[in-house]
Image (tube, rainbow, N blue to C red):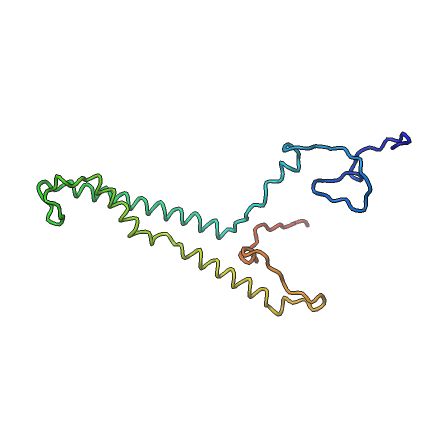
Length: 180
């Protein structure tokens, strides 16, 4: 203060990041804790996507399906390469004149990608679409439920996230006090 009074910096006279001052002629300020190493910046990692138990389970199952697909395709490619290599003079099913023109490694590579195309149905991509449509219909039904309408405030239930209905009714922890 101009008259010599000292005012300590505390929570009552601290302006945090992105605050806007209005109806003020001038401000004398002091920058406290600036930079990327501040507590506010270190804790601000951005919004994180919360996955439900069902989504985590489906992701692991799809990962197992991908591993099974790659294993089957690798086994099929090795088998195709060995089978082509087993012919000595001429393979009756090939259009080339001699078996010397056919390379087993190249045929195995082509067989691997052929098996990928044939067996790709193992990975259930339509399952994700079905689950998202089910979530959308659940949110619609919750929003339009007449039993969840508040007459006093004239408001309906607002469900802003699609993964909220999945977690409804699931008890994760149960505490019990057995005194007496």
